[in-house]
Length: 108
Image (cartoon, rainbow, N blue to C red; front, side, top):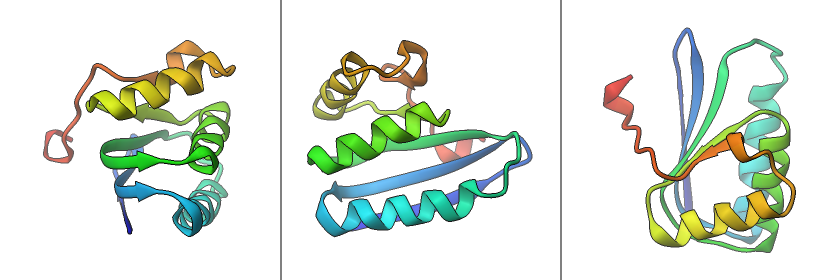
């Protein structure tokens, strides 16, 4: 199961993703991303993966594509940090994600 919460401010749009990023849930995140990303505004796009417990290969491909479109990936867990490192090695710009920074929604 996957929960996606979108929070918007004047400066950024944040997707808070919780659960397992696998199979049909990857498609759901992709659809949500495409729908919200059509607006062409210049706000930062932040994907908060702090509460993700598993990412399959299709989830990795989606995260890679999101990074290439300018999304910043945030994670604090060891497993997700490892997955993001693999995404980075596979060709994503090294500045596209922050594995060491924890950002809480209430800080915004």
